[in-house]
Length: 85
Image 1 (cartoon, rainbow, N blue to C red):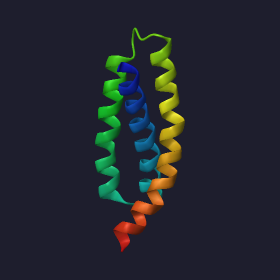
Image 2: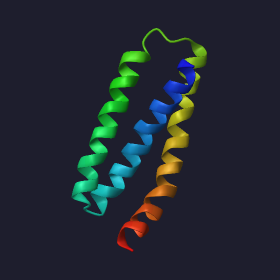
Image 3: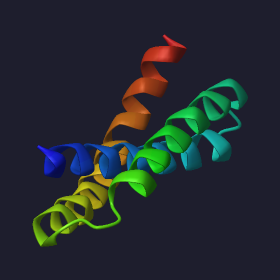
């Protein structure tokens, strides 16, 4: 169960960082501010949970990052389009 939580936290961290980068590039001030809360919360969880983790938990955490960034790259244009409509 910890593996799933760490994967999710890494996913949210990297997804939020990628999404945040697009918000900054496109000057979406409110979205950028809101995304910062997700970044902070997910990083706090990682910092508190990861120390003392075993190999499977570390692997789960490492896998969350690549999945998170690809998801952010896919989701940002879709969400941006929906917001403009």
